[in-house]
Amino acid sequence: MAEPTLTPTPAQTPAISFRNVSKRYPGGYEALTDVSFDIAPGELVFISGHSGAGKSTLLKLVPAIERASAGAVLVNGQNLSALKRAAIPYLRRNLGLIFQDQKLLHDRNAFDNVLLPLQLSGSAPAEAARRARAALDKVGLLPREKASPVTLSGGEQQRLCIARAIVNRPGVLLADEPTASLDAEYAAEIMAMFTSFHDVGVTVLIATHDRALIERHRAGGARVLHLDHGRLTE
Image 1 (tube, rainbow, N blue to C red):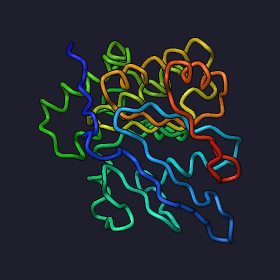
Image 2 (cartoon, rainbow, N blue to C red; image 1 turned 45 degrees about the vertical axis):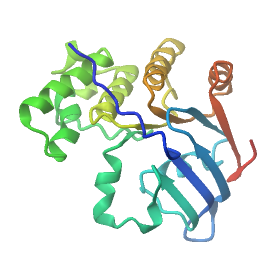
Image 3 (cartoon, one colour; image 1 turned 90 degrees about the vertical axis):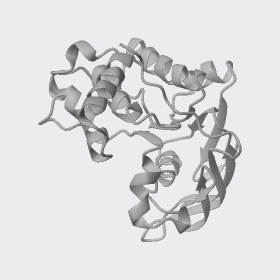
Image 4 (cartoon, rainbow, N blue to C red; image 1 turned 90 degrees about the horizontal axis):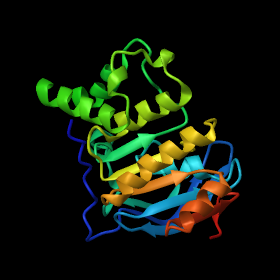
């Protein structure tokens, strides 16, 4: 079965830009303080830092799950502070999201979990089914398309989340601790998938505290953004 083709971000503008971004939560807790960086289309970038450094908050600002308290977040040149709520689903169609809270639907099988984003975007049923199976095939789960998520191992569930994230052929993939709680073999498989997407021009942004994983990929040219108590230090 043909693999799904992900869509690289257009090269004329940064895929993601943060301009003096701060995020303050009710009660005064500041998760991010004056953070600025650009991520070029097709880059593989890691966000590192201790637990509570602001990695998850930073990722959630990109798909407008959270909104910046100050500064500007731009995705493909679009300033999210000017984005109306009704436009957020359209923004997210070009973003593949893989967060720690997987939100797999346990009342649906693996195929239906991956099919759902295409149904929500109005894809024709036959085309949606073809793309869902292609995404499952890409992550090695096509033989288990009828399985309930609860019967899958931790690594298989993570691969199912990746299939769901890539089924809309996004130009940008965001992953929050994608190898946490996985053994070394499964973690290596998951990272191989992300590097394969990066190899075809997709922008990949991964938050992790795994320094060994970061150093392995830094040696191959990946960039690292290091957060320390909400401030960008590297």
